[in-house]
Image (tube, rainbow, N blue to C red; front, side):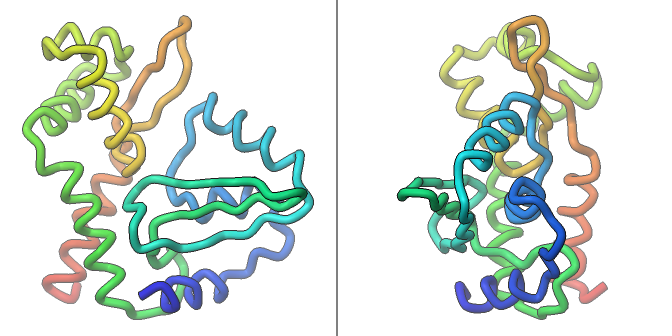
Length: 180
C-alpha cells in the first residue's frame, strides 16, 4: 500500500513547482490562510522537502525538521491525476472520509454551515450547544478531511463547506463500488 502511494506520487511531474505547491499537492486539500502562512514560512527555512506516505495518519499530517530538511508525513493515498489503480488505497481514503461523516454531530455541523454559509467557530458552538473542546475536535477532523475550509476572520476561525470535496467523495464511492 505504501509503495503504491509512493509510486503514484512519483508519477506526478513536480518540476517547476515551488516547495509550497508540491506540499499542497501532497496535502490534497485547501489550506486556511493561517495554515498556508505557517507552511510557507516553514518551507522558506529549508533546502530539502521529503514527502513520506504513512498508513497510520488518516487525514492528518506529521512534520519534523532535521537540519535543512523538512519531512512531511501524510496519509497514504493516490493523488489526483495519477494513473494508478489501487483499490486498497482508494478504499482506505474512502474510509477516512466516511469516518468523518459517520458522526451525527459532524454531519449536523456540515448541514448547519451548508445552510447558513460561513460561520465562526463560536457561532457553531452556540448553535449546536457544543463545548469548545468538542467543537474544536469535530472542526479539526472536518477540516483535515477537506470537508471544511477554514480562515481567520475577526480574530476567530471561520468555516465554509467545501462542496467540491463532498462531490469528490461521492464520486470516489461510486467509482469504488460501481466502477463508474
